[in-house]
Length: 296
Image (cartoon, rainbow, N blue to C red; front, side):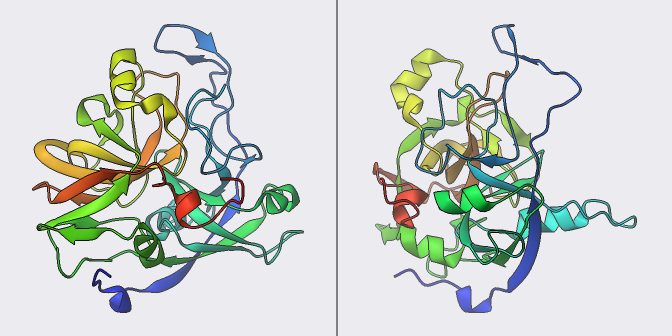
């Protein structure tokens, strides 16, 4: 068992409401091939897509699995501060509880964080999805920000609950942290989300427009909730290309038709010196690791 500082990190409540899907002023999205299309995207309760399902091939653009949450309370002194806290403090693997409506008391698990729109995605059992309605409130026990590895501090942790870290069960071997992943991804095809100076919220996208690269790395089979390794990517203070660096994240939203976009990845581990050794394992998906579904 890896030694961490989990006894020193704060567990605190954050809350969001099930948010409606949104469509911008332009009804059409223009694909990377120049085709105008109309597709569902972010927000809402997605009844037929959960972690463990494929993240590619849907008639959708940036669709989010399960239930999408946002805190829409506005403070005139600090606009969006509470929504930002929901996104930054929520960690993958945190427990979520419905606190009002027909599904009151039902439990779920945080499985994703989406940048730009700043949504937090929660997986609930199918029967709970049928009870939920838009604007129902969901409270999360946010626990994980500040988590560190005591025996390998060069590997930084982000957006991850101690519980999920234990389910991943990485091991230190020959001075490196071995982490199970379903895929390796070259940094060259990472797109939207580059340019931030932190990775404490949101995600960045695997662009899927080079068929040769997608076939080489098997990316057509990406699933929501997969752990993936981004090669030559350092996420220590934002997202940059650095030869020899390695980062691991979790797939949180679907592929996209828009140039520069694709399946989103929320950062979990990073090492600018390459002290992460990804190990290919088809079972490296949060749905399996946390027993979120009976049909996988």
